[in-house]
Length: 114
Image (cartoon, rainbow, N blue to C red; front, side, top):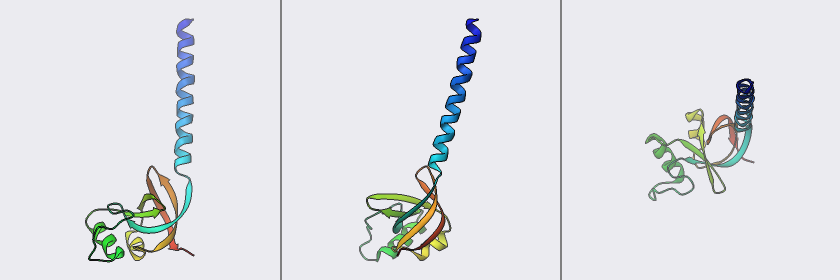
């Protein structure tokens, strides 16, 4: 009888954990719309290359291996998506729509901010 109770408790606990993890994954991958400035993951809010514009610095850092990022206030969100499209908006204020996957935003659309 004790063995049956233990197995039942384990099954219930495992089911609850699986359901909880599913809810976390759903909440994390919800569609988001963010407005901010396109930058890169290396420089973020402050560009270090003083001899070039913010757009030039962003493009250089991305060519060097950084990813495009969106600066929203004090936060920097890594962007995953069409690099050619994001490149057009380097150092510009945009509105990006996409789904969060961890700390990355998988970009569905990007357009100039109003």
